[in-house]
Length: 92
Image 1 (spheres, rainbow, N blue to C red):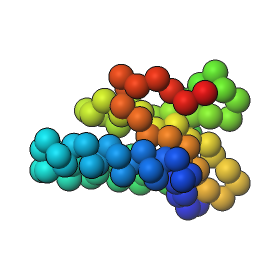
Image 2 (spheres, rainbow, N blue to C red):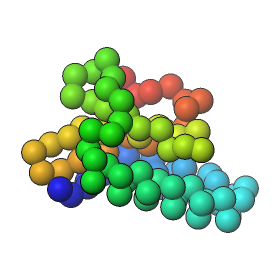
Image 3 (cartoon, rainbow, N blue to C red):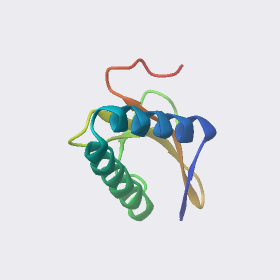
Image 4 (cartoon, helix red, strand yellow):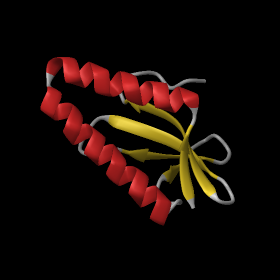
């Protein structure tokens, strides 16, 4: 199993980390470590996240931080589709 971020998810991750770095550089490292831990969890247990109303799309909360990752499980990969702050509206 491998992990792949869509272009949108990669861009969102960059924005999340840039925003946090502006206000709290050490906080960005902590958030990145937790997101990385979620990535590792999904590689070991791809169905760990909750199902959503959208067919084939799952989500996992990056606790204790207010971020949600949506993803799809493929035959040999986990595809992260988005990483967003919970205060933001989801992409349709």
